[in-house]
Image (cartoon, rainbow over the protein chains, first blue to last red):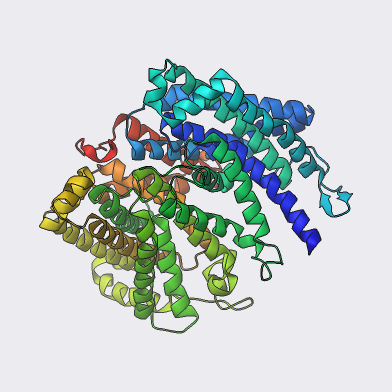
Length: 295
Length: 325
């Protein structure tokens, strides 16, 4: 039972890091562009397929493929920003949400048409298992942990130490106040899309290797968990999203631990997350760490 | 199948009518009360499952099953509405999708209750074939008997279905059209444009929104049950989250704030939808049936984006507040 607890903790941390990193992108876009991006899941999917093409079709190693996927995700985010979302800005919250829903459907089905519905996997040995005594991890999980150890602190440092990172948080927190202090809000808006796209890219690749296999529904399946993450952390709060992701990942995995009255059946993990989302929106719409304010 | 085959047109009519009823539900919630419900499909699914379970498992007569479906949709509307109606538009959208996803996950995973991924056919457990629409088919057959003298060889059960669907759709449109022009409708319009102002003159805004949500849920429930009765065997996949956005596209196609353009939008949408499925004309012949499903959904997304970008008032509508907030 303790072994299961340790195993679930590791799984939760991995899922949580994926949710946290992608959540940073989604929450900053929500805060800065005032946009609930329902196409964000497809950014992850696109990146996973870019990694698949680089890794399996062209035989590049996984690290270069992941870097290409990040670049691809960033490029996609920028393209959609400049071609569609920026020109249409000011259409109202619901219209913009519906537009991103439409964009998501377009992207997802283009991927279905081009890549086909069959399941794919990146070139990583899925049969091996590293036995670390208390826990067992797959090579995919090990790689995801490696990525997480590098990327998560890098993102945190970027947000806390660099001028651009600080500006992003400032704009997300209070756009007008940030503009008054001389921050070029428009430019920061563009950088935020770059960051969001790159994070979606790395998140998509991590998700693909942790799951082992994926199809064009990869990102759609996790989108509402990412939304739950950013509501947990407080919309627009980047650190909140990082922590919220880890909390959600751990809660979802640990809820299945036998120690809790036998544990929740794993297939109901997502239901738990969605119930959490609705309860949060109702009772703590400012997130776990946010100060009370009118939304 | 080709365009000159009446069977194709009967199918288009039935599907278009069902989509009309579905979109009318969203019309009440979104166009009338300004509630961006992104999980409308959940009302359809819950009602269809409640109906099928009551009939197939408990052997109750179909009308009781239909009543059960309506009750289930109202309960869901209240469950979703109590938390969601106090939220800002974009949060409401997120919360309603989450609500819809909960319903779909439960339908997928509560095998004992719903039959799980294999759908309504598994309602009696493995190895047994469950049906729920037997008496409906008998009913349609009876109507078809009276249609024979008028429609000749096309006086068939599916013609009867199309007629039943459209009779209901037009009745619903007439009732809603009257309601829209009543004091109740004017309060709704006020809530849509500025709910603070309506609250300031002493109206219970959340109460009115809840009414809109419930009426919309009832219409969604009817369309969901009709869909189930039409296809006979259904599974959670017949109530995908994307169906909600079919309803949005239908409302936007016809014209945002005009109830009479809902059936027009629904017919246009159904032509696009069934046309890409059944018609074998160039360039559709380049795609096989599996690919056409993706092509179809791609087109739905494209039209959503194009209409919202260039003609948010729809084909016939006039430009008003609804999408500007």
